[in-house]
Image (tube, rainbow, N blue to C red; front, side):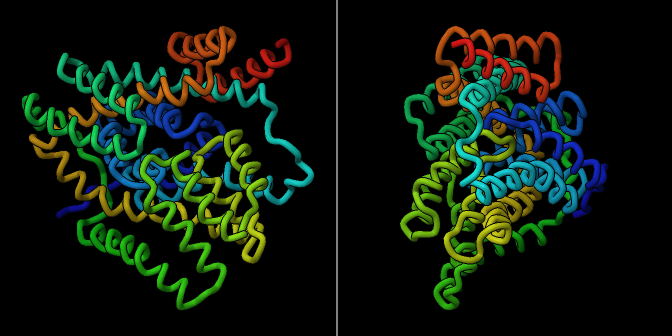
Amino acid sequence: MQIPPTSGHPFEVLLVFLRLGLSAFGGPVAHLGYFREEFVVRRRWLSEHSYTDLVALCQFLPGPASSQVGIAIGLTRAGAGGALAAWCGFTLPSAVALILFALGLAHWGEALPAGLLQGLKTAAVAVVAQAVWGMGRSLCPDVPRIAIAAAAATAVLLWPAAWMQLIVIALAAATALALLSPPTAERHQPLAVPLGRGSAAALLGLFFLLLFGLPLLARLWPAQAMALFDSFYRAGSLVFGGGHVVLPLLQAEVVPNGWVDQERFLAGYGAAQAVPGPLFTFAAFLGASMNQAPTGWSGGLLALVAIFLPSFLLVAGALPFWEALRANRHCRAALGGVNAAVVGLLAAALIQPVGSSAIHGLADLGLALMALAALMRWRLPPWLVVLGCAGGGWLIAAVG
């Protein structure tokens, strides 16, 4: 099979994702909205359907979905260097901030003021609402797909478990395959996946080898660095839903073992809410806060690499096979249902937890509506809207 060429340079990818890594507040669902606005609407690196196909793939995979989408975009744009550049740009700003916070926790005190953090949560409401509206118009053009999206949103709101998302996506694919006519091949726009199936299969094999081999190595070689790498690799490999879902597993790994005390764990969790980028960078804080070596910068970077390594292996290993499947007409019909379900999942997330955790009164609702108008009506850049919401949240808290 001929491998299609990529069309960009890793440095270009790095600059774009670095800006996102410095401004993308709001958690994984909001990140998908930022990515759509940047790479589908503004830069046109991907079509709407190609983007939502990537989102659908990453919903199937364990790990941080938004980071995996970013890795996939970098890979298709500029090859392996682009994937690494996308991850570095999007992840390192928050990771560095959290490591610095861990190192200076005794002097910093609390994280961001409550008003600023509340404003950032309100900005996430507007970003997610814009993504739901834009993706819904494109991906739910008829009654069957609107019904699939509504059913998906209802199901995950009634049963808010990570496994329910997988069931919803699988049922949406089966429903669409039965109800929707297979689209013509012209609708498919190939992604540039610079990996062959042999290389992809080797990466998937390495993922499983590390998953089952690292615990054995940790027993045979009882070094703290090996135990840390094993724990964080498993956290990145086995958690579906990403974001907040990984926190209980990390707590069970580091607190009972005495690596990080509960008070510091909770302080780091609060700080992770106040920085942009993926919540999985909380691992960097934990690694830097270890009570035994490796700690500091070495511990933080080791934990960061360990928790994200499964994402690299899974995304690069799955994409070549995913590309072949999505080119099939019947698979495209199933993906039509999956894409509609993704809209439903985003809509459900807009209600719970994004909206419910951010809107506590009329002032918050007004700020969210102003941010949404700024995004959709006045077409202001998301980072500027985020800054405005942070200032607005601070002002509301000061006046209140």
